[in-house]
Image (cartoon, rainbow, N blue to C red; front, side, top):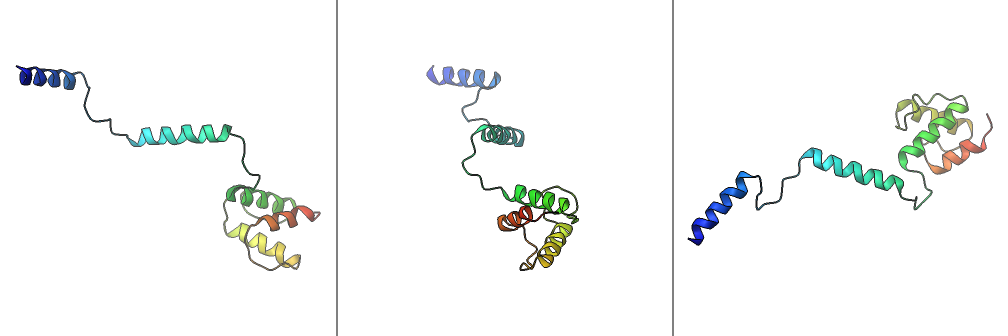
Length: 114
């Protein structure tokens, strides 16, 4: 009797969509959770004032553009034109030519008048 009752209950649970195993997370669920975490993180107060790498590149691109250099699109991505513009600035101002964005370079760009 107990076995028949358990089988009947199991059949009922399956038929209404209840299962003993947790639901499998889909890519949509994972993306939704990541977006929610990103949203919550953006509302949290900043722990540090150090710019992120993309912001560092973007700010460097803006400063280069304001000073007459062509870093390409102001998109925060380190591309060929951004690297060339950094190297041109570094050469003109007697800096070691690395072609890399850095906080030091950004400070130098901000201290140089157009």
